[in-house]
Image (tube, rainbow, N blue to C red; front, side):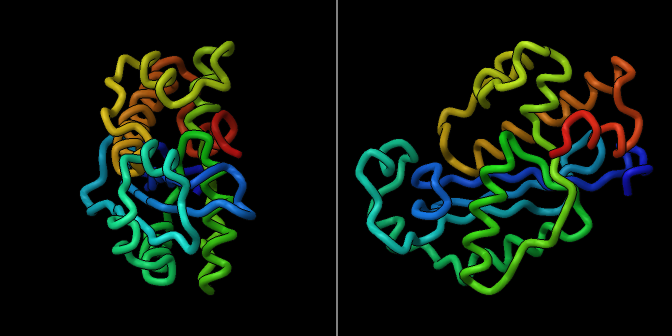
Length: 195
């Protein structure tokens, strides 16, 4: 796969929303994954689901994500959502903004439900941004979108909206890096944006 040309590569852009940033105590409450094929959005359907948390969620977290307690209580369990979500990982390079956090949560939670995500190459759009703008290597999602002149989602902190925005940013970053002569193959991409 590393020697493959970028325009033939299969990617899955993911976003998870959590109740906090500590995988040992916080919960995943939304997951989304959108296929990208080379430089365009994939033809296969994406995936989105809320996940019922196993503990009560603070009111400020619900407000941040635009969720209501009744909606979360009616959401499917991690046991039913994560196996379906993880099926999308097969034969794809996983992409996300600051993706290491999402993957750590996903590994911990999926282990508890008995299905581990396959080991896949990971690409971080934050690192890709830093390859173009060296002083912006820690840019948050909204700052990256602004640099790329992409409108930020109205529902920021919604996994599907953030995955859509990250997908668009990823495609633009690919075009820009290829245009600058920095990437030609998956190996080049993994060298620049891989973690």
